[in-house]
Every structure is written in structure tokens, then in C-alpha cells.
Image (cartoon, rainbow, N blue to C red; front, side):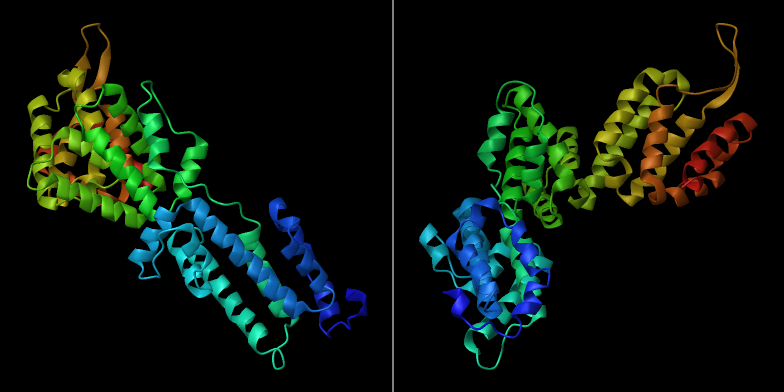
Length: 402
């Protein structure tokens, strides 16, 4: 039948373009569907109609992906962004196309650039559908619509969203658990509402002292793995959530570790963080920076890292803590050890490598404070010894080497 139709003028240009090759990128489950078969036939005679059909296929695929992702996520995304409500699968089938594109974007199923491309394709498609006598698909239209619909939608597998239950089952299994690559990938691709839901569950378990130790530890481990993959907006909401949970209570060590693991310690009120790090500094002063306290330095400094170190520490506490770290690192003039060895400097072997790590990780945040400590009377007195002074310069060199 198609051989009896007179091809439109742009047909040969479309045949010679990249459009036919794009069809091979469509997912196998769509390749054999009647809609795609009809698109292939229409390309040989009517590119405008082929563009409309490939866009229709993409919209149909998006509707299926919304259902697979979850009506609960779709409903929340619609509510938050003032889109038509959704409560059941049938609502997705009847959703207006323009609003559907907005919905999949707010669900996190497509990125903003992809959303813009689909919106532009929809505009072209409407022109082709309603103005056949005035507007005919050109080569640029075909390439744009086919490229967008296939690259953004039809070549992309549906997202099976990670559920809280999936994480709960692993965390509560009774043995040590670590998220695998598949779970991490699913979490990274999950929309913001689902990420927030999962992180809140992990926080609740980690902070609940009534939970078995292994379950608390698993939840904490999952937090540390998922934190780098959280959307920025999710971190803001989690920070607000933790602050509300804390209220006017002081931050304790457990809460500090959990907040840092979730990457939101710095989002908590500055006054509360100042009080907490003041206590941390008091512990440092109690232990002392002399090398003979080496047996306590390791635990003290590793805890400081678990609290977020200088990333979470308010500015007002950075200089006093940094001074303690420097004095601990540079040590005191050496001499003959009890074994008869000569050491130019006596310093805490347990503290030195951890302090280097803390200061190196802080980098530009504290470089000015570190340089200013040259004029501190205690530091200046210590640096009067050339061997001790070399150790101070070694800390400064951590930045000059960058």
C-alpha cells in the first residue's frame, strides 16, 4: 500500500540523515511494537507523521515509567509542584501530555535539559498535527524529535525505584551489611522524595538506642555510603529535619557522628555546634598535646574526624583547635631516648599521621589560620628550635604543594 503513496519532498533527505540509524537504539521491548513498525513505514513516505508517531511512543513509554516508578512518588511530585492530582494508574493514562512532561521531570525520571528537549519536541509535534497545510517536518525537525524521543526516553530502561523496604530488609537482616553497586545506583537515580524517605529511615534507626547494635551499625554504614549520592535539596531537608529533632537539646557525640555521616552537621544551628566543639576542645586540653599522652591521642583525633573535623566546626572554634593540633604535631625538642637512641624531636607518633590527614583535608579552610599561628606566643616559642620548626613547615607544605 505504501508503495502507491507519493513521497513528500523531504523523504529522501530524511532517509539520508541519521534518523533511520537512531531507530536501532530503541529498547528491544519497543522495537517490535506496532507503533514503531508504523514509524519505520511512515519515514519512507511522510516524515511529519513519523515524527508525531515517535513522539506518541515516547509519551506512552513515559506513562509506563511513571507507573513502574510508583504512584506514591508521582502523587507527591504532583502535589508539591501544583500539577493535576494522581491517586491511581488510570490517572496517569489520562494525564495531559504537557503536564506529564512536567511530572516526569519533578519525579526525577528525566533531567532538566532532557525536559526542555521534550517540551520543544512537543511544540514541534503540535505544529505538525494542527498545521499540516502550513508546516511540514523538515530534516532538522525530524532529527531533533527522533533524537530526543529515542535518546531521552525510548532507549532508556524504566527506573525501578528503590523502596524503603528494600533498605530496611538489608539493615535489619541481623548480620553486617553494606550496600552493593546496584543499590547505590538505584539510590542515586531515585527522585528527591524517595531519597529523603530512605535517609530519614536510616537516621531514625541509627539514633534509636533500643535497636540491636548490628542494626544501628548497618544503618550508620548505609548512611556513609549514600551521603555522597544525595541531592542537595535532600540534604537541606534532612538538615532541617535533624535540627527539629534536636530542638534545644545539646548535641551529643552520637548525634554528631550521625549528622556528619548524613553530611548535614554543618546545617545545624551554629550555637549548638559551637557548644559541642567547645566540649571537644576541652577534652583536647584535658588530654594535652604533650607526646607522652600518645596513648589517648588516636581515639581523640579519630573522634574529631567522625564529628566532621573542620568541615563542621564553627569558625570561632577553628583557631584554638588548630593550635592544639599544631602543638601536638610539632612536638618538643628531642634528646636521648630510654633505649639510648637520639631523636631531634619528641612527638606523638599516634597523633602525627592523623593530624596531617585532618589538616590536609581542611586545605584552604584553615591555611590562613595556620600561617597566622606563627605569631602565636606558644607556637613562636616552640619554633625557636630548628628541628621543631621543620615539622611546622611540613604542615605548611601540605598546602603549598597543591
